[in-house]
Amino acid sequence: MKKYIRSIAVLFLVLSLVACGTSKETSSIASSISSESSSISSSATSETIPEEKEDNSIPAITVGQVVEIPDVCEFTIEDANIVTKVTPPSPASYYRYYEADAGKAYVNICIAYKNLSTSAVSSDDIMSGKAIYADKYEYSGFVVSEDENRSTFTYSKDISPLTTEYVHYLFEVPEEVQNASGEVRAEINIGGTEYSIFVRESESGTSSSVSTSNSGVQGGKQSGEVALNETVVTTNSEFSIESADISNKVTPPNLSGYYSYYEADSGMTYVNICFKYKNTSESDVMADEILSANLKYAGKYDYKGFPIVEEDNRGDFTYANITGIAPLTTEYIHYLFEVPQEVADSTESVVVSFVVDSNSYSYTVR
Image 1 (cartoon, one colour):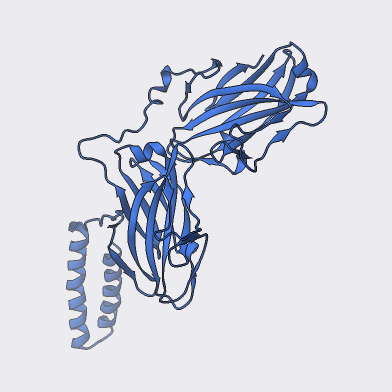
Image 2 (image 1 turned 180 degrees about the vertical axis):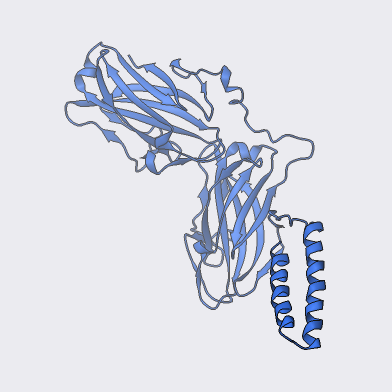
């Protein structure tokens, strides 16, 4: 319609010039414009311009395929696998490696990266991405670089112009991902372009063996008293209370070497509840956001607490506000309440109320 209006305006201007005594050449041009205007008008009212469909597919690259991005890099996927331990290809007598915690594994993608730019780039800046399991569950990762003739790993490394280095993208996933038959792929951005790397394709005619224990949550426990070791299923989780005690010092269950612990102040003690929590949602959740809790002593005294998380195969503690729990991953979360010593010495009731996925529950410590 805009083209049609513009043509009529031009026609009006030219005809005005003709009326003022223009030459036959001008008159001929006006006639040509009039004819073009009629043609444009007809086209604008009768011709349908097809809509272009946007192609959102991500190109897939395979192991051994060479990809060049001019003036940026040339790279090759050297290997893509799922393992519990990632070691350098030519281990030295002393070398750094990455071993997943119990119940977990690593999606390991090794990339040979040649820097085609005119200055050095840092290995931890050359790519970003995520791993995807069963076309549903997403996992974040981190980059490490091979060093010393591929005999060990280092955290970050400068890659000089025209130099090739070997960089690994590691994604920690539940052991379930390693043992199942569902598709596992990584979507990685290199040089501003997204690429899909298939680590494992779904077996033909088989399902992905994804845990479905949280399907039909309506049948799960929506609220009420929870017993020790009772598994409760909610919309986004499975949890149970593994232990509950009152003690002056809280330590991780598998002590070895250096570890963190919590010791109550003089005249105080801790009520310690350990939750076994599995994230059944499709993305990471922060450990300090999965539950809230409060303690009531003797039916009337209220106390607030705080969460901490086990790490390093249950051999240490870390802060809940810096810990993400990946999909289908199980972690152990402790909720600590610092209370007066007389709570431990008395026989009065100790009840903890808590909320998970907007559902309210309680547990009787004593």
